[in-house]
Amino acid sequence: MRDVAIVGVSMIKFGRYPEKAVQELGAQAALLALKDAGVTMNDIELMASGNLYQASAMIGQRILKEIGQTGIPVINVSNACATGSTAFREAYVAVASGQYDAALAVGSEQMGKMGLLGGGGGGGISPEGIVGSGLMPAVFGQAGVEHMRKYGTTQEHFAKIAVKNHKHSMANPYAQYQIETSLEDVMNARVVAWPNTLYMCCPTGDGAAAAVLMSMEKAKQYTTKPIKVAASVLTSDPWTERDLTLPDVSTLTRNASKQAYEEAGLGADDLNVVELHDCFATAELLHYENLGLCADGEAGRMIDEGETSIGGRIPVAPSGGLLSKGHPLGATGVANICEVVWHLRGQAGARQVEGAKVGLAHVIGLGSACTINVLQA
Image: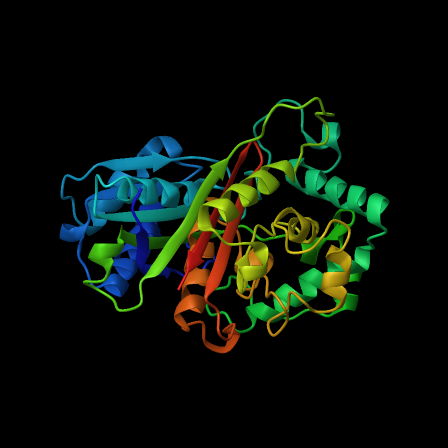
């Protein structure tokens, strides 16, 4: 496997675009990434497209109809919340293998107000009556409660994560919501699935993001500061004898992070910035430990001491995270990579993590899939 670099990235502001088709959103992000890389579609040899809710519609080919049909191979990917980052990894592997020198990864989704798993409306028995409060809110609510039981974590710890991320979003023009919230507002908001209140849950909507990857040798023809993909890992759940009413939200990430650190030759202590899968505030706190940012049981202390805020020891979600930036599923994984790249380039503006040299982008899709990409300036 040869070294691979990211040469161009882009994302559109996450929000709601009912007047546009999803391929238009993807095309917009793709063109911006190509421009950022200083190339055209004639330079791209393979495209990987991630989209979940229209997975059978060949969105990759539809995007090419908007930006240039050059006859290159197109891979369409669907992998739960890790859809976009899996598309990125397909592009990475294609270049790392030596078969291609330049590839384009695009993640796109158009969800509107349908909710994290597309809402209900399908008829039959509602999952709410089986697991308590809709699938994902209940799963991550239960996971948070289990952490509280084991380590004495409080609802306030989770609420502080929402406060942090909403504050970070104020400096991110790509975030769906740029609204600062007080601890009191977060704690007193409507409960969705305890301990997560409304402001501790990510919004869904529409969005797209894209990245141009090249072999390191080719990348140096276009930039003097290529961002190296030090590791790109994808895992799924191993079989275990566990209670199936409480899906495992940790093993996927723990296995992926171990592999990623080994592949990169780096450890959690080397990271300067992290964009992780904070679909709920409880998820972010759990992933501090899953990613090795602290020891088990120490995540509450981390948030109390401000270690994961911009200016802290290891800033997490300087973009505002999914809690503020939004979570159009197919776009999220590539958008997290874009954010890390901007920090490593020193292009993150008012939310810049100073001196960032190594960053990690993480996405988990229950069902199951987890991607971790370690990037290095």
